[in-house]
Image (cartoon, rainbow, N blue to C red; front, side, top):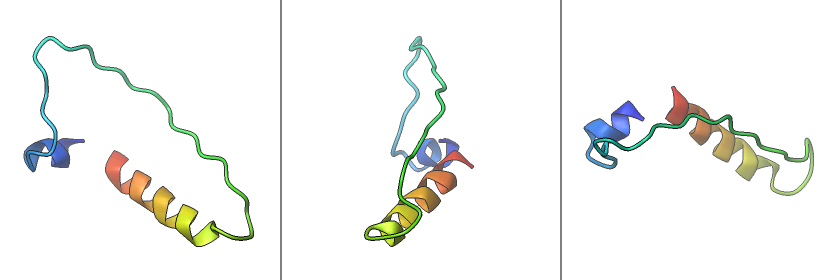
Length: 49
């Protein structure tokens, strides 16, 4: 989240509560859409690191 704040894409709202929640993804191991799901998972991993 910090890179998004630094880039001006997000901002911290004074006094707003902060929540952290786990994220889950369910997807088939094989078949149609597998490459798209891999791209989405990679994007999520980049956001959280």
